Image (cartoon, rainbow, N blue to C red):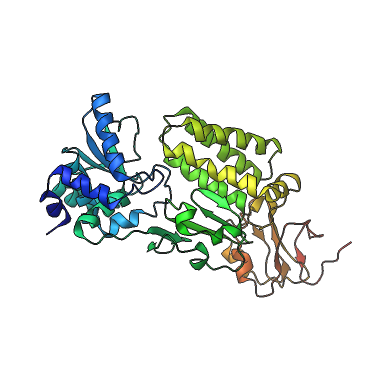
Length: 399
């Protein structure tokens, strides 16, 4: 028998009782008992005079979509879990929210969704429109199906640096999951952390979106933070002023810093805007997206100061602070670098010292990869004296 058939062998109250006895909790940011969450939806539906329903989705702030692997691997279990929740609430209104970018996934689920009477909706959850419905995490409904299948096991889903999603025990330490060599920072639970946080268990760490990222000395905190905020900007529905404008301002300031136009007042502004977003937005998108910027500026202030005051990226990742040049004493004029440059910004000819046009150079590094003489150098310091016109190999003299 399927999980749904097992659930329907009892009454809706029997289902609720089993959920309560099992102490099943809502997955993700709102880790309240599932029984309480279902009851709260029932009460809200009556108060708002709206039709009771079940909405399954990722948390709005989950821009990495790591936990979608649960849906992709076990779509039937997720659909059954939605249907069990709906049966417990005595409603036929069921929907599954799929991130807007996941068009192929949505298409692949249509047949299964139709089988269970689940409406597929593209985009993030509109929390105002969802009032009166039980908004449940995709993992929660999958766990609910497992409970009635008799195979539920407690645990936390994690993906380290984009690797395959795995379910681990809540008491497992992060240090046991990561490569501990050259750890500059950790990113999990929508926040940046110092390397010492690796001693936390995954249960203590609050890894609600399945993501653990390990940053090394080659990774820039500011650049990473800007990318997190940019993804949130792209995903945000834009209906709430604090979320919409806050994300624009936070992402803009991070980008300005990485491009050498940062100002010291950006740090205080980040704190002011970030804290306002945490307390003034109705969904997880605004509430937690700002945490990346708040934690980064608080814990890695020295790196921000390097960027703002010294115009230097310690990781060498921000291309605005990086210069690439051809060492005239090593260049043999072979032309290999010219052939691979995607922007055609290297000037030269056979047996002449080549030169890079810094204005068009994107610092992609392809020229460095093919140079057998190691003549192409990347630096964050000042450029040495270089030729300003084509000069034969071996004829350039510094003056």
